[in-house]
Image (cartoon, rainbow, N blue to C red):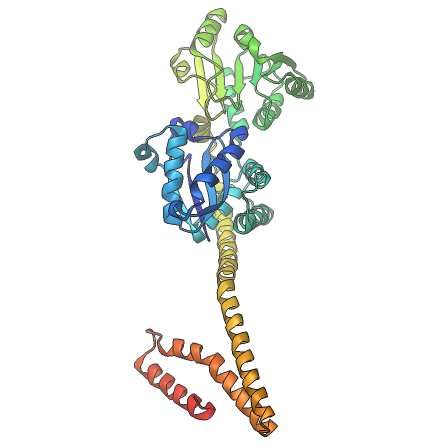
Length: 429
């Protein structure tokens, strides 16, 4: 069994493709079960363990498979079919990582080294959710379970021993920074949050520090809208009221799990007219996007996606380079530890074969010795023959393997031949 990661992220694929490939939280479990039913056969790569990590910046499939080449092709075809994307379009943006490369990637992702916001901590929580979903549908086995547990431990070690998160600017902080550039002081601004998830909570905390004039939370589930609105001192509204109220807000921050845009071009065109063309700042943190792409072409409307904000958060990277080097070195050590574990696991079948062979030889020689004793042969002679015969048979395979080693020099080969001759002369063949 071998580890394989197939995926794409903000470094390899544009937002327009990432949103097509993304999986909503509610569809991951069913997708994993579907993958297992199609890909578990040896002809498809023998995929036995699967987990899916899908965020605004990446979609990655983690698996343990018998044949990683076949499994990679099968996963790519499955993804293409499920998401209705041409394989040729998908191929150029995908990365396929196996063995130690897969382990290193998982460690780097959890440590925030592969994030748009270097050193960010949100990704660990997202990986834990992915692990929890995979566990709930029974798709975690020995290899992925060990990989995820070690991944979380490495991420914790990186954050506690380096300053990888120092000087970092989150997406939420970047959104506030852009808003300040557009409006200056935000104390007279009205802010509308569309959605009530973790990302919206983070944005609410950052924008709340600017003391905005009015705050409203719109969400499909009223109870969640009320809970967040109460926590941040805002007003809850139903998502169905969005088109009626959106013109009242200078800043709109949206992040829902909708598979289709919920803020359309017509809605914003009407809102701008009502606002008498006063500027509007829309932050779309959702993947797939909540905001129709054409809205960004309107005058007086500033639309920022996760990729746009990613450019803002790049500042401060130079100050963190020393921490990055420390983190990379630590991760490399832990990858070697994982490699040693894999090697030990791979050796288990061979160890069992050796144990069975040794037990069989022991049984044969013991029966032979007992027959000799029943014939009245000297016990000391019988024991001597028994011990020599056992040693001879147990070490024979190892010595022959060494002798046939193609890396041996002529001198070493001659020495090995003499050693074998001496061995057999002493023990008897």
